[in-house]
Image 1 (cartoon, one colour):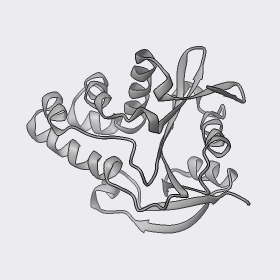
Image 2 (tube, rainbow, N blue to C red):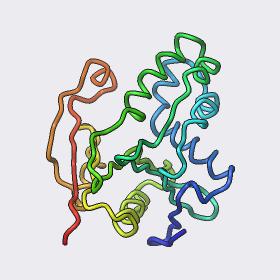
Image 3 (cartoon, one colour):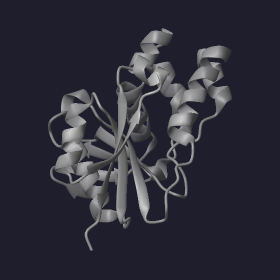
Image 4 (cartoon, rainbow, N blue to C red):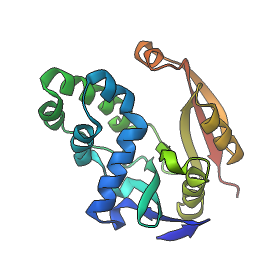
Length: 202
């Protein structure tokens, strides 16, 4: 664990089951709430379904007073941050819903990324509602810069997430590629994915 600003940053692999549960809950609230509403399922069943998939060594969390306030994941050439089991989603959501959720999650969070050994990919960045605007995401990303020895840090942001884009710009990331959104992406409310990178100075 390390202190960054007034938060403690830790690898999820160093923490206990209670912290894992908080991390999974925050992940679901940050990335799956709209889908859960459409599927007419609660956030707790979603958290139960997701919990198995977290590769804890790939996740970092920001803590304060024993609570998880933010998280992010780091993927590399060695692997992504999740490994999904289709049968668990089918048990929680039913055969068809579970199969569909598994298909999209596997594509987004498990499919290998073409990276070289000096690159890492930052993903799943989110902060709890009560801690937004307090520098949680900044502290997490700065921790990566200081403790991971990659030369190039990559991430993506959608065109409608202006606040995240501005944060990444302030942290030294620049856009190097834009990709038009597909049909299902547009249904989620955005038009482009912007790919950004920061190269470590020699």
